[in-house]
Image 1 (cartoon, rainbow, N blue to C red):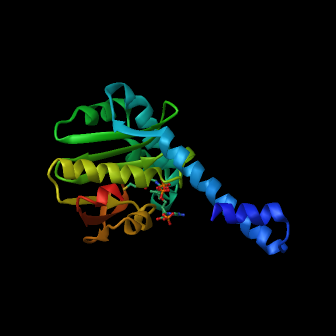
Image 2 (image 1 turned 90 degrees about the horizontal axis):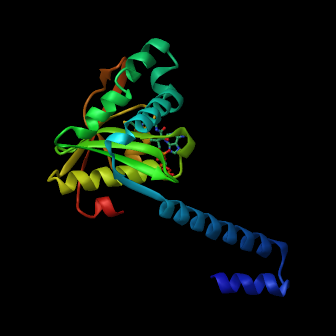
Amino acid sequence: MLPVCVTFVAGRADSKSVDILCALHYARILSDVQLALHYLRMEIRDAKAEDARAAAQVLRRSIAELCAADHGNDPVILAQWLSNKTPEIVASWITWPNNSVLVAVENDAIIAVGAVTDTGLITLNYVSPDARFRGVSRAMLRALEARALERGSVRCTLNSTETARRFYLANGFAIDGSPIRKHGVSGYPMSKRLAPHDSLT
Ligand SMILES: CC(C)(COP(=O)(O)OP(=O)(O)OC[C@H]1O[C@@H](n2cnc3c(N)ncnc32)[C@H](O)[C@@H]1OP(=O)(O)O)[C@@H](O)C(=O)NCCC(=O)NCCS
């Protein structure tokens, strides 16, 4: 495909529409390369105690800035939701037994935080507003599912925000019950049966 395009451009023998097609083709290659480079730069690893402060900050910003569809910018609801997203409490989650807190790291900065229990309950999956819609949550979700599988779970469950409902449906989760209210907002119970290949796709 690429050499054909190069021939067209070099020959200048074709119409403007061919040039546009070639430009689009190069743009797609470029965006694929950029995406690949992005994945190469990003690492998802287990959180360490010293990550707690930065991880709490990502959780707080993600909720405050990205989840307006859930909290409606109501300061009371927001304060309730953020009340346990402190460095001290996040540090305690990191050391909990039967629980994995994972962080996505890019250029030494934490850009997403996820957590899953050994029973497959995903309790956190929050991306920094600076890294939204770049595939980071998708990669984090894959890592959480892989960890649940590794620990013997065949199913992942979670309570989705309104904000992330579409994202989970697109990633193989299905609605699994009536909404549950927590921190003054509705959570949407969802689940997904895990198969070994799921975490690799
Ligand atoms: C919605 C959200 C989870 C997506 O994560 P992300 O890292 O930004 O996005 P990714 O690039 O990994 O995934 C993109 C997917 O998000 C979904 N998406 C895209 N635009 C969207 C939008 N405007 N609103 C909601 N979901 C959207 C789609 O499923 C998209 O997949 P597609 O590109 O194949 O269509 C994230 O942006 C977000 O708002 N997080 C807030 C925290 C939160 O609610 N976490 C869940 C706790 S249970």
